[in-house]
Image (cartoon, rainbow, N blue to C red; front, side, top):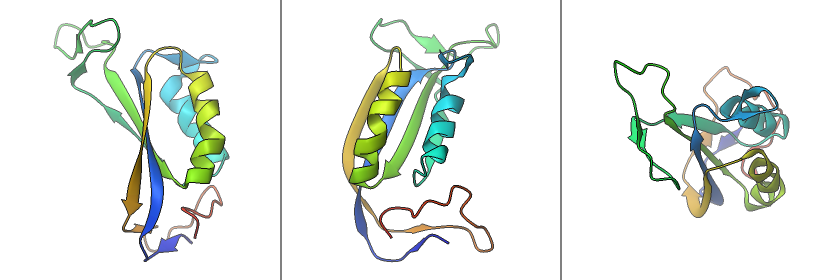
Length: 127
């Protein structure tokens, strides 16, 4: 079970892309999450934006009229520097258009919910 009580340094990766983006016939967000889990990343979250624009300066937003809009998504993933260096090229290769940012973070707490086991078998952020 992952149970980190001491602070540790990590890297936060944010991948910005569109809801309609795909990879190998499936949604890009799903393909990236599956890759990260399979490769035992510490964990990742996909966030759906209300509105945004990117390199083309075209605003994408949700409205009642357009329920199938191409809203912005952000996959956020925090992990050890070593794991990020290993997996980031794979994530980058999946991304057709968008942006990837990284920044250092201090992880103050990383712990599974009581009674739950790690599904990927990963050792978390270096613990």
